[in-house]
Length: 39
Image (cartoon, rainbow, N blue to C red):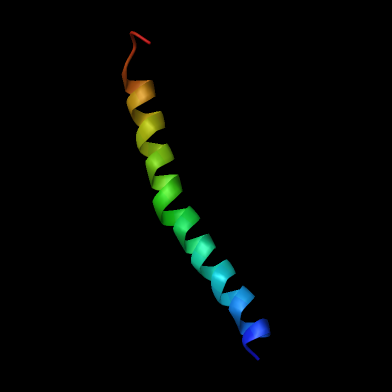
């Protein structure tokens, strides 16, 4: 059963990581880029 449950758990962890870790960093980078008019 681990071969059925494992991929779903891994996908859920990866989705959580992408939504809350990577996207938060991208929003910070875009926000600082947009607020800096000299670039």
